[in-house]
Image (cartoon, rainbow, N blue to C red; front, side, top):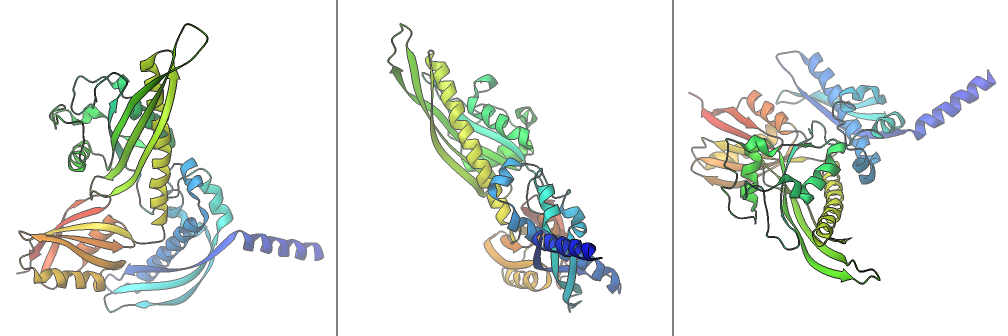
Length: 389
């Protein structure tokens, strides 16, 4: 009996050391009069929020970078299994028909960390985006080359682009191929190799990519390394400047500006090596920055763009913003960015996804209009206001 008691005490101490205690708020709409179902869903929502907070407190940028795989389905979908126990601090239905449950939950971090060794810590419901790479490249003795401005450009010469793909693809990143643009836009139609954000967004949208990597990689300076042999050795410097762009909202996720070098008896080969080296360093820096940004959003609100058409009067926007703040769950702030020709662009801070926002907008009964959703992307919702008769 004494041995069993000691074993229980040691097990309890180990469990305490492997647990994280957090407070989380769960919400669910009450449909009809089914309060019990809404309560169960609110409890499940609170458990998921508790696991999200535990992930954010346990995962470092290094861990995320080394384990570039999706965890939304693997961890968050079985969040109840990680909540060792919980205590409901408060609960009840609001006047707007939302059942809220605030709980204190003990998340079993030891088990959770075990799963995190092989997966990526990322936002709940954040799907791994598809990536289109558009990097202008120039080697020693050559002119700037870009596949979108030169239909005859050889893929084998795209050292920087191929290096980034080779570095990211084994870690789970999905890339779109250039061939998907066939028939949608004539490659070569954009004459300039100095790519602007709006053009990159256009290419990304037509290719089905959510993210575009754009920039320049140039090998410019060559020096001869003195050797005792008759064969000269060339040293070439290269610079790269790249940025990662969200296609749907135009936000820049990460940037990198780096220099590198390469050496070879062939000057052009030395340039290739320099471009590859600098692209490899850039891919590592970009990946870390992107994942760090996503990691910081795990426990905080996401920024979602909402475009509304059919807004007949500007005064409706203030009413809409107030209604969103007070009636739609998870919304913290609503900012108006523009209003022109009965179309408004709003920026919304919300604890949830664009899909969550769209579902809430469709289900809510607005006083003067209904909302019809026409487009949903990772960070953007497009909707139309339809006046009630």
